[in-house]
Image: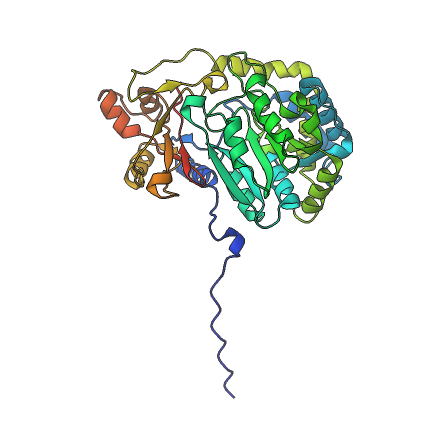
Length: 424
């Protein structure tokens, strides 16, 4: 008897919740850079936000000691007691915020902490307000959780900061969260207490709206501007604020994947449910290293010195096309231009040219009809500097160098693309 032929396999079908979402462009660029470097090609990567120094030696040594001590087993779900104590002390020391152990959640990076919060709180159609330009993952995390990102475009005239009137206009009965990042990625804009207070006053009038304060760039301030966090400035909002931070940027620990958040017990407990059914605990060795980073307050001077060094005056290019200097935290992201009008076309040809010369950056992308699109364009660095870094002689003049190394826009969903000009 001839066996019956097996039926054709059904084509793969994505879940609807990720139908419109792709893998982060930042991760794609990082993978491509790794591949090119293995091929022996020098690359300048304008993608992921990597600090330009290594994890401090005393932090690495703490990880080695933890391995030798056998701290390689499962830990408590959302952070060891030692790490939560170090985080609590950090919040109190640096931010004058008092969080108990059961008001702290530790995840595999600040991104997971935010993802857990959205998964634990958003129902279908719930809205999250995002101040654009914003980090690429914010909107996609909201979409995966079933929510709806509501973008409020922040203009150049206001230093790319959210304004109270615009926030008020964006709030609806379905609004669940405002996500606010200061200092901001990608614009570099930061909020002083005077600039932040009007936004908090709006939230005080809308008790159904919670605040997610992404403070991951807290220590990356370049000209003495004091950092301020929302729950400290408006204690009345602390009971509905999740303050998110981590060790990635301040301690050059991006690959260790440790982020944390402080918030009300009910929220932290709900986030623990999500994490218990996904990753469980963060890496035990990474947690031991993070304890050392957060506890050794005296060692924070090494981080401060690095930041001070990067804040030295940089060459300013000729004034062209209305480039404007950003204030405060934008000192490393020095110039931003806003373009109005037609969409910028796909940059496929320019991307290929940049890659050929060893420069990787994020591509431009249309995401809305022309009338709704605003783009902020980003170039990589001073052109002669970049050309020298990749072994090319910058002898063609500024116009030719610009053409060879013109950067692409960083896609910011749903309808804003951002790009910054950084000088070395």
